[in-house]
Length: 233
Image (cartoon, rainbow, N blue to C red; front, top):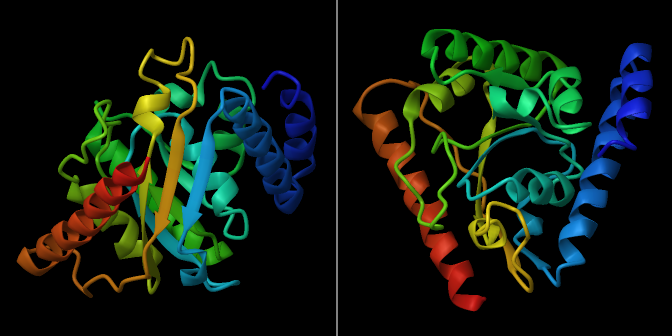
């Protein structure tokens, strides 16, 4: 991560967004190789559900730091920006700079109104620039691998300002197992599973019972995919 910081900053100062995202992908691939050195394996299914050139709001469960790395490499063609917690925006070589420079939303969960404002800023930028955005609606990682209830305000704010845009549900597994020792050391021989579901349309309104029912239905789809992936490990 230290090696990528200088070139990322040079590219960022030059204002070359495409080059910055390309370098960010190279960073993600390098970090993924580090996971693979532990004997980890990445299995992806459902790539056929992604239409090249189309932008999406990606919603996924959250198990660990590896989720962003796996998503960034799996969704290379989309090059998504992220909704990330503020702890990742400082102190992580290359990762922190990449989040800030790429236009991702960095939020502080202790200040929910400001967090919603930042998510809306990202949504407007995504609509204007044609970006895809990835969000983890659980709001925190599930260390035991069990998908938790999704928080609706963040995803609702994102959809409200970034549409019209299809939602791409993705199930992730293995992250909680890989980081079962808090990352030191990584657990060896873990299978990192990715299941890309067919895109879905969100309701026109992002408030009220229809939206909450749709969100829960989407969460259940992702959760079922997690269980399916875990059963194959």
